Image (tube, rainbow, N blue to C red):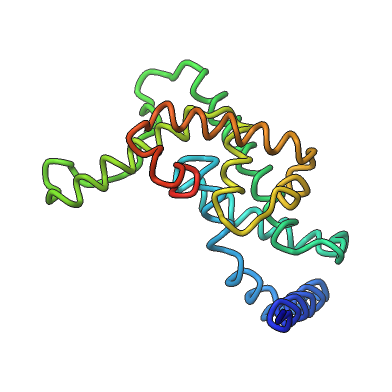
Length: 204
């Protein structure tokens, strides 16, 4: 079994973490570029809004770099970072629900929950189908509880094991499996036509 590449990756990652903890700006930039896409996907699945996801990613990397001194090197940086991302995204989600529950003053614009998109009537057939599918997926994910959404968001990256998800969220593996089961069952209920295609969770 060839174990060379993973070892090289881990060694490089550890070296970047050490340099970033010492204040090396290039090392921090390298870590950001290495993990920003995964962090964004998780943040987007939890918050459901691109603008919130971007804010979450930025805040999370700032917090991660500020706390590198307390980072336990035995754990992977990605797992540790995604814990910060998930917690921050859940904070944003809870804050949004509180804001929406407060009556708005007259003249204040109602917050837009719908993502910005082109007018469906102006889209070609294939683009319209993709837009409609994306909207259905978004609504289905929005129907999950925050806890289920967090587990699903981490699982859907395809990069993390149950053990790593449990570590990122600070919960037992059994809880991860339970929440993921209920999340996938809910998505299958809302998207029955997509359920047979290797499972909704793997395709979102």
